[in-house]
Amino acid sequence: MSNSDHIQRILFDEIDVRGVIARVEESYAEVLARADYPPVIRRILGEMLAAVSLLSSNLKFEGRLSLQAQGEGNLRILMAECSHHQDLRAIARYEGALAEAPFNELLVNGRLALTIEPEGGQRYQGVVPLEKPSLAECLEDYFRQSEQLSTSIHLAADSQKAVGLLLQVLPAAGTGVDDWERISALASTLKDSELIELDNETVLYRLFHQEKCRLYEPESLRFQCDCSRTRSAEALQMMTEEELLQLADEHDGVLEVSCHFCNELYRFDKADIQALFSNGGPLDQPDQIH
Image: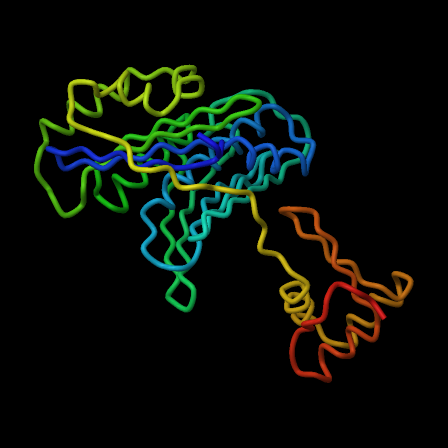
């Protein structure tokens, strides 16, 4: 398969279950290259990337889906996003040392939010407390509590690859309890190492060779941040012109806005700041200062 980053839907011919496999390698490396994360965060960010890739496979509109976990301990925020273009990005915020621990213990008093933001539509967010020891189990809880959908999620990541498998009862069906119990039981036998090391066809055969199922053509994923000079200018306009000019004076006449996701740096001199307010809108010019 030419692209290491992709999702593939699984079609079950005779039962009311949908499935998706996501594999993220190059995008995972891009995320990790932008910060010196400890091993435990690297692994969880891989799982977050695999998870949003899986969940985005059900998007029926233009927009983005994000997954955010927040806590009150040393690990504060984990966030991953996937757009309808299947562009991925992810970030973590933490302080101090972090050792391996269950997901819900790393994020003290934590909660998990799944947010769907259609372009030009109404934003939707579902939130659940982190009560299970893994991200996959917390997501299963989310679908059980918020969507009332029986869901099986398996996430695995090492230092180079992140992979996920999602199986879910079709929401309109409402039948086939025995089918679901059989499929979910089969899925539970899959080991992390198998999910990471085996290709999708082999995983499908390993689990479901007695079922009538097949894989759709893969759909590519990629790392892509949607930050821009214009969006950075819009963020600056949350302050007044006077406040921004004063900050610029304190920083040799130039304000620098850095994207937390990709570390891209946007610079604004005093003429840029004045233009933001005299023109009544953000700058459209390339990233150049006067």
